[in-house]
Image (cartoon, rainbow, N blue to C red; front, side):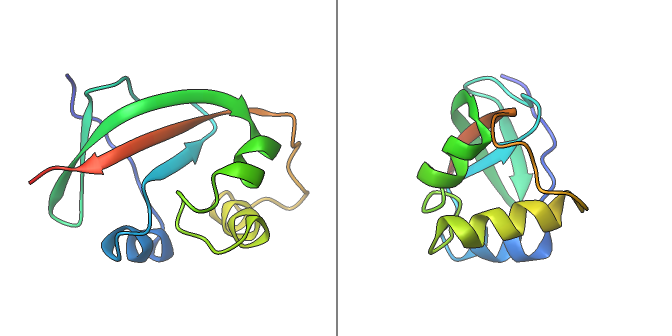
Length: 102
């Protein structure tokens, strides 16, 4: 088990604080199951890391990312990475699932 660093935008920290965010999709794998990270003065444990296509992440993971729609998740992801062109929906990404620890 390793302590990793995951950074979140202020908006995503708000989703995390509200208990709405249970996963984060990243371009690279940042963890393995059991790794932990700190956010909001709390420790979070990685429960799964799943490779997938970015388009699949947008279609299926928006509720776990804390969003009401796939479009909202798409817009947030594009803004987070400051993309000037639409992302390749076939691009491989990693969904990191996590849970807060007491």
